[in-house]
Image 1 (spheres, one colour):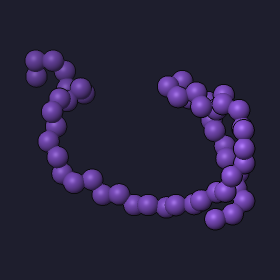
Image 2 (cartoon, rainbow, N blue to C red):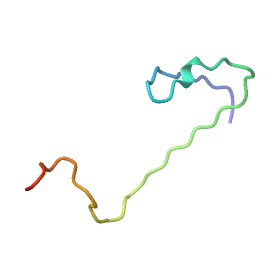
Image 3 (cartoon, rainbow, N blue to C red):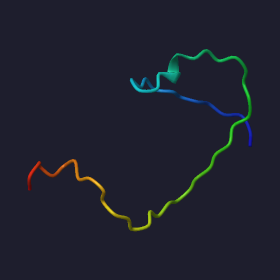
Length: 51
């Protein structure tokens, strides 16, 4: 916890960088690690049709 800075870069799908800063709050740093469990491919978009 403590003072922090935020950098929001332009993104076409979510242009949140355009939102005004209304109030400064606290900052939190969280580092996580994920392991995805094996799953099943439902549709392979990289595979050409008919193959």
